[in-house]
Length: 309
Image 1 (cartoon, rainbow, N blue to C red):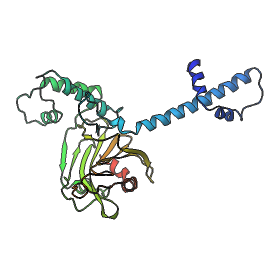
Image 2 (cartoon, helix red, strand yellow):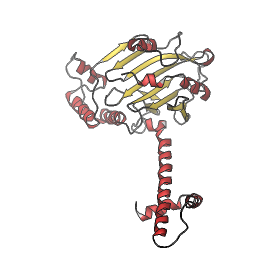
Image 3 (cartoon, one colour):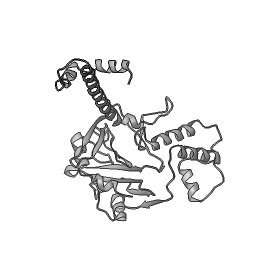
Image 4 (spheres, one colour):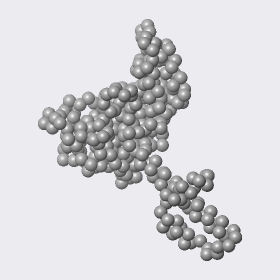
């Protein structure tokens, strides 16, 4: 670390902290003792700087701004992606592919002759219709060390069907009354899966959610949701069993995210703190609160959920 940077960093730290750190040092002030003492002070100061930097980085890391979809100015409302935070390979690959689709020359991605192979269906799923577009998409996958899953399983009956398929207990609260909500699940090779269902919370209230879990190393096209980040209240929450999650409560939509060692989880909830259609909402309770969302999170078995492979 350069001397000028150290000086600037030291000047930004409360002098009281440095003085307190020197209390345990020898009182001798001659020769090498001075240099040794100064080196120790600088070392402690550097540790404080690193600690503060890590705290700031962690705080910034858990934000919907780090999941915001980048589109040309004037594209439309703010949207977030389920691909994870912006430092993940899936997020970066999806963003690069979106830019290609937005700016590729007219006619370059026109549909080729119809094919029925699973490989071709995968490309259709990411809107790579021409051979040139497919080649470009393959380059992006290689760049970020990702690959297509070789198979997908469509599962009926949402959470119940998914857990029955894997022979495990239901890892989050379920609701027997589904109303108008779509209930479905998709599982991809490697452990990525999507789930649409209804969850029941305190006092019989319910809400519709869409859960996406992405596993490292695979490309499954992310979902983008319109989300009013400016109006949302965001906070970090640590469950009693130790899982750290990030929660965002918006006026009409909410979101819960969590990062694990090899996967990323995003739960999009179609309810918020002040839904406009309170009497006719088919998406459940319009009056979610911080307390209700935290209570809901406490009922999720994250270890079981993340163990699905």
